[in-house]
Length: 332
Ligand code: PMP
Image (cartoon, rainbow, N blue to C red; front, side):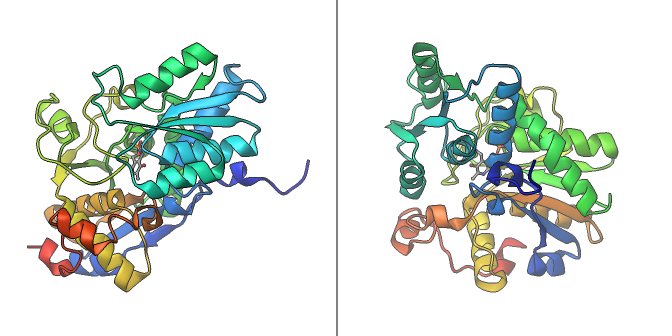
């Protein structure tokens, strides 16, 4: 055995980055886990590796098999990159509304990519159901990130312990938005086990039902809309089952956009909008609980994947979003 390893070994162990201005403005340590530094460029590499390893162990994934998945992009990228390192092929079903950069990247990486119209989960032509039917028809392995709890287990085994170790156990709160819920649930389970006083917080975009679920126990309030990709869940996935949070916030896209632009201009961090939603949640908690907290959140992926949208003035203007607002505008 060599002492050196391929890229599948190098998922996780990401740095914890201090967000300087927001930390100074709140008197807290606002820290972001740099998940964009994973081999496939997002937090979803952890889930992809966890799902693949679990399926290998229980015999559902055989050498040379094809992995099929419905994904907003990042899970597909993770499954393709890690899959190639381990000798698998991938077939990705993705809603056509997702950023063209992600769709192009999946094709370049060598996945076969099928773009489909965006449909709600209850519709049989929703991207997840299409992926499941493909697996059934072709005998492929369906990763099933939403309801396969190998996803949250990966975060329980890696993201949680890393945060605990990197903060020397001083973490006071963990904030995450929800796509599948794997990141929030797995990390929360680990941190609460270590210290039940760690606050777990859900930052939800408009148009999703997780704020409603965690605050009122129903998924009825899912009004409004968000341009954030990869998050915005309307149902309680298996990865979220049994999970409780200390509080949940609804975050406006404009606030998240203001944050990612400040970080880009002043701190050299180039992030996607779900990272901005997460950081906005961390800032709200800091303001509510006051100075002195160590608050950790997730920098899910990089802005590279969204240049034609989030960093395109014409597109932003059509969404009535302003990239120039000062950071102080979000603290009023
Ligand atoms: N941000 C981005 C950009 C994502 O792609 C995802 C995953 N879909 C998330 C956040 C949320 O992660 P999770 O699925 O673990 O809830």
